[in-house]
Length: 133
Image 1: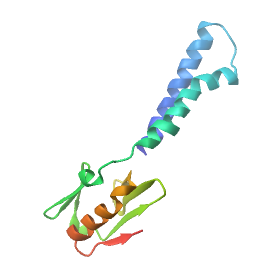
Image 2 (image 1 turned 90 degrees about the horizontal axis):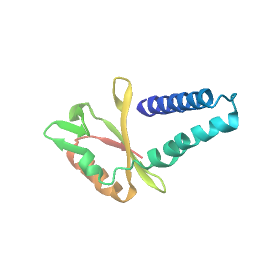
Image 3 (image 1 turned 90 degrees about the vertical axis):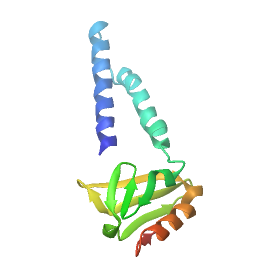
């Protein structure tokens, strides 16, 4: 997944920075010092990346004629039979697990206040779609 690749690259960058640091100041490896380099990476992925919430899912999902657009992904609505749309305490969840592209599921989280409007939009615009909650 894209997020896993980014995490691995960020961890590798932390390791390279730490290695450069220990070579420049001529110190031996220290797990505590390495954690100082790793800490910003962990903060980024836990707090900043987790906040990528689509505020307006109707901008991310639209139907034009027989085509469903989810961001830049394109699907024929005749191929869409089931859509996952659910909500948690904090977010709404949209996914097309039965219409994977290159083995990847098209999905995103969104502002839970838009749950009903997105659900209604999908039911009105995609014939015979089953909403999985």
